[in-house]
Length: 87
Image (cartoon, rainbow, N blue to C red; front, side):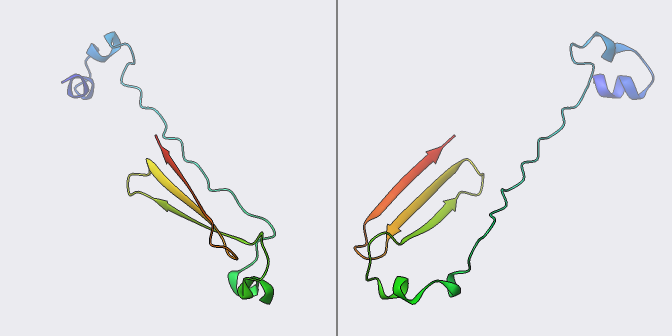
């Protein structure tokens, strides 16, 4: 009703606290990873799973971008660490 009143040239919107101002949506940019290496270019010793300390990471984010699961797996002994984040 207030928006249609404003379009008609009346001043009812001036009595609103926000005067029909719209907020700008904040757009977050994903961070840029420098010096990243493709999984195909990793050393052969990592694929052999012969040493401790080589980790794989994977993330799962729900369709509403409110919940996320991060899994970390150590390749030699298959130790798994899972972190869950919820807003």
